[in-house]
Length: 63
Image (cartoon, rainbow, N blue to C red; front, side, top):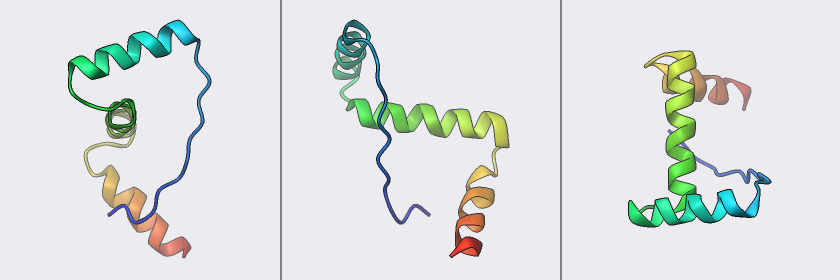
């Protein structure tokens, strides 16, 4: 499972950022939580439902 965190810096226009933050607030989630959700969904769409096994087993093998 996830053991570390890494920073991802994304530049977006201020109006989109404000709209995104407002929508996240309405769902009672932080923008970071929502971005992590989007990333998990995107990875699963592209790697399949067993993506965690693929990603985290590769991480262990690289250590």
